[in-house]
Amino acid sequence: MTSAVKAFIFDLGNVIVNLHTDRFLPLLGMDHEWSTEDALKKYEQSGFSRDFELGHITFDEFYRKSCDLFGITVERRKFLKAWNSIIGDEKEGMYEIVEECTRRAPVYLLSNTNEPHYHDSLTKAPALHFMQEHFLSYKLNLLKPDPRIYAETINRIGFPAGQIFFTDDREDNVESARGVGLRAVQFKNPVQLKEMLDTMQC
Image 1 (cartoon, rainbow, N blue to C red):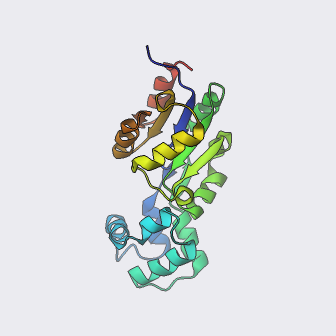
Image 2 (image 1 turned 90 degrees about the vertical axis):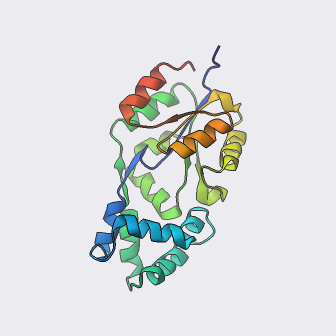
């Protein structure tokens, strides 16, 4: 017999809020020189974007390193506006889903994110304010799919992993979460998620 769900954990990007990585370059006037895919790859290869989400460098350091990486000169305010444009509106239907979950069990957030994106999400996604605690990579100094970030989150929530439901849009994050015992499901869309949650015992 499957044990009842005692807590829910949601990812942030492409689960609670839409992400629009294609908005970043045009706002900096760089879209004629770089494709979004190439720019993301360049960030990944640099290593400092990972450091930013791990909380190892500040936004000001990230901003300066980004200007050096792409060989651009841009005001900090303009860069921040472009960076935060990646965070879109709350996904339709997620407010109602999260609100319903709070009537059944405690709800939490677990996200790979950075400080500006997190604070911008708070202004765009009212669903976040239903959640008891937000577990953030830049505060925990850990990134999904590292199993340690799930272990730390489980420890802080205080329920056995098998009694905690987790959803994330990335398959690698879901697989790692399952590896530590979480009841993890890959997020496809709000309709799919609601149908699944409606079948769960709490």
